[in-house]
Image 1 (cartoon, rainbow, N blue to C red):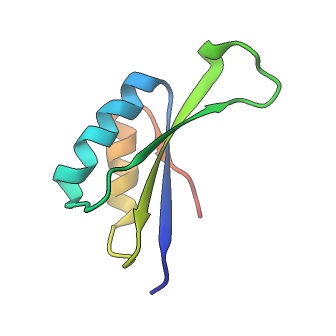
Image 2: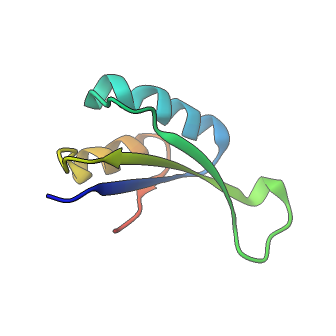
Image 3: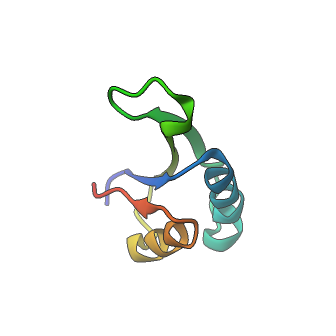
Length: 81
């Protein structure tokens, strides 16, 4: 399987940081997930920014349903590839 990148969308920075901290322990990641601030189109207010947690999955071993469940625990979701 080729390189896979999973993107979890979270409502705020606190939720994104919590998910990023949980990911390595829960899924045995070798690389730290990346946090990315994603301002919504047309929005200038920082309060309207979503946060993305980007997880590299070079061997395609992570279960998307489990990632989505983790994001859902923090009011987020797994972006469809």
